[in-house]
Length: 259
Image 1 (cartoon, rainbow, N blue to C red):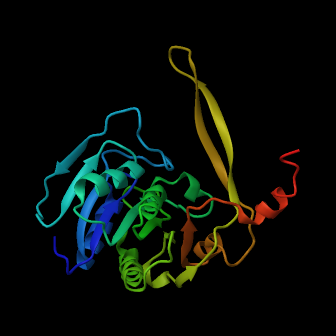
Image 2 (cartoon, rainbow, N blue to C red):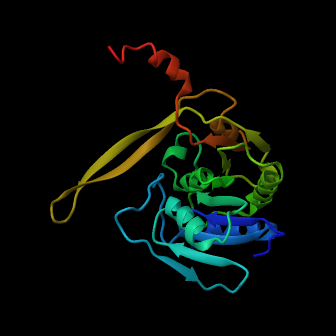
Image 3 (cartoon, rainbow, N blue to C red):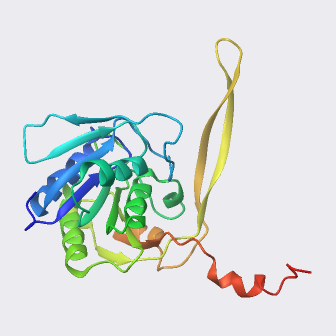
């Protein structure tokens, strides 16, 4: 490994063959030495799931470029980061990047996101991390417009260093490069999914359910990721993985817990 270049771990949740991770590999190859460990199949919506009751498999994939080591993992995005840091990498990487996700991970979606779970897992292990997502679910989405911004955000993160125990959730609007108005640091919008389960029957007569839903933004603030994305900006939300509700501790301490 070349210690003069930053060591970058690349992963995702759409799978090792997804166009989004290929775009991310291309950009990261210009910045540092990269190791890719990504799921062998799509793992969207897995959240921070880890594999505990099944075997994990790790396979090295042959590439035309010997400078890039690519591994596919049978587990979840969080598994990929764990196995990369424990079994593949010879030292702690300088950065972990996850994505580019095909689809939004803004607002409440960060909770369900496999893309962000990988970034958060890296953060838990003390590795600076960024999750990148493009608001385009198309498998053939065009990532060219956002590559300069990925490059800029990555370079700035490596140069300035992230606050401790913070990772970045970056979402790109589906726009041409010249239409993107800039980058905004945002808070996570308060929103939810109004979910529906469609009940159907298999040909054998067994009931099954198909989940769908409508995304409802309940937040009118102009400092949110949803506002930024809807107004042509790239949103960056600093995410912490300490889930303690500190604002609630004073109130809860007034309750009669020990009487």
